[in-house]
Length: 301
Length: 177
Image (cartoon, rainbow over all chains, first blue to last red; front, side, top):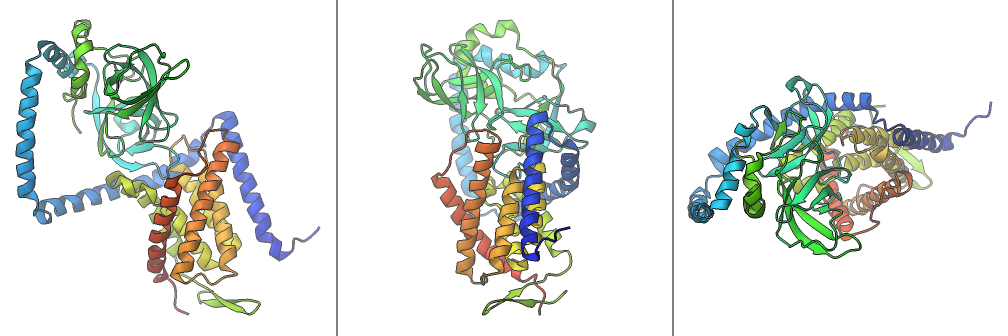
């Protein structure tokens, strides 16, 4: 047997470890296996610390904001009064438009219209441990009835879908991940196309023909065609449109603040949910500015 | 075993540092948990690669290539597992294995105690780490990925600065000779 010189042992070990990991990568790609067992171990080991960390951060933040960081409270109150006046004006303008009001009512009745859809509040306890993916981990899992492919939203709009479920936690793939996305449509024209992530904070809307009239600032909502998200959940706003061949290049700003999520809502149902048909015709044209109110009636965590 | 000793390479005398029991395990766990938890509340801190910084530090300090690469492997695979199912196991594992090996190899030949040297090394290792990740994406996973952008330079500088300060803190966990 040929002995390996000691100075080459570490190099041989490096080669062996790298080869093993490359094979591991190849195995996963070929069989689409994500090594679930090792993930379960890793997540199970880390989640108590993450939950503890979330609890600790919440406590420290609470003590700080409620007992120490009060020097700006007066200024904040003044700013809130100004903001409140502006909001009252906005509400008044909204109420003057009956069509918009109809749409708003339909959206606010979301929960009553779909009482069979149980909503579950969840707290974000961790994010992806690297920049290669955009996922979050929430403190709800199998024990709470969460299963894969359930939609996750916030009152602002769609967030993503559940891709992995553990006993007490779940991992959610955000819309901005390269593999994330949702069936969507433009509010004004009702033109449909998938909205997907690129790994950046912005998303893109695909397969919208060049002939379609798409304007910057136009709202995008879910179409319900992906069988994951209910219809008319806000997805985002068009921020840039470029002509392409044969499809337009449309960049979309997410409606939900995906880089600053602390609480989310899991839709505990995978049966398709739709708004009442009578709420759509005029709302389709006027609901763009109100789509952000789609889920206020959802139970907050 | 528990004492600091010197590695003689030619005319240079480089110390190999030892740490209190459990220090490496604790630092590894802490880096992974903080990497996953802190950005929930401060998203901009996502730019800091704590697992990489810890891998580099212990690689440079222990100065044993086998130890360095195995620590990098463990750290990388754990990071893969905590990054969600869209990140295949081995993605960060391969990158950190290489960084761990090179860090401990360089640590065995050069004095890496000076903050300026540490800053430069962390900057270089961060760029290398990201380059390996891009290579894996493009060659092994056949996914499109940009090569270099301004964000990489900024992220490398930020990590080098944070790492230099972090290393000073971790130096306090060393055992006295």
